[in-house]
Image (cartoon, rainbow, N blue to C red):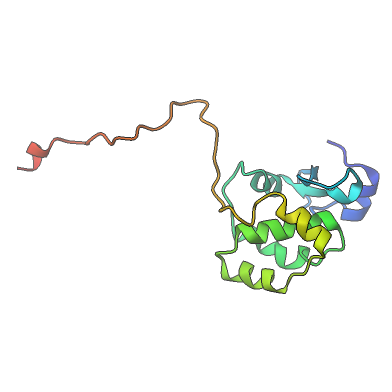
Length: 146
């Protein structure tokens, strides 16, 4: 996917969250108050997968938020706040949240996703296999141990 020229320039052709230069694409931040370029950011494949909860959170990867949270781009600020909240059990993320400031409008946008109330659970769809059984099947009979 080709990046729009204005986003390519703004991002310096790298992920606006972690600075990776691999596979980049536009990420439209959910619950944006209005459609405009400030509601989009350039993100790498790894960031997008974790933002969209298609992959478990890699806390080490998200250490990049200590830098990206200071971006002047509203979409980057909002996503940084949301991800820091998803990682709030990490001491470094909690510290960054304590330092981060969003004005009322940006904070309302950031909270619209509910990420600050949820954990980092990844719920993958059951497609290729049946859901797991609620009862465990013993591996061997109890008489084997007697």
